[in-house]
Image (cartoon, rainbow, N blue to C red):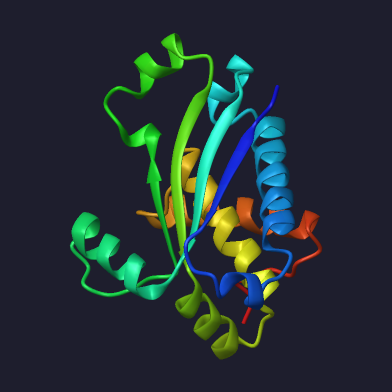
Length: 171
């Protein structure tokens, strides 16, 4: 099965900020999908079809516009996920298509850099966390309730541990 992470670098400063961003993104993608498959969640992973995710590495201006247009939040944010599992047609797509298109993730460089500086963590580790978070959203996990947040955070922590990254939620 050939899962695909389609990387689009819209902001050239990404290549200066994280020179190995493509390799790092691929490792995070592979680890996150392997973790989810081992858990058997979500159930559509049992179909053994290849998964596709589009990852756009952008900037605050682009993410601000998307956040405003799609979430009615007039500000930039660190990561946005547009999950196909949220589409009404997702179940039909699972039955008909040979590949499962999970959706799109976009990460804003400036917000990510600012957050990493403010929290004293490396840009690499924060990028890994944001990408893991985004992929989990595309797999159908969310954090709208305290219970959902706890479940999603525990998955993030476990995946990041496999990447030798400390729990990002510890003070």
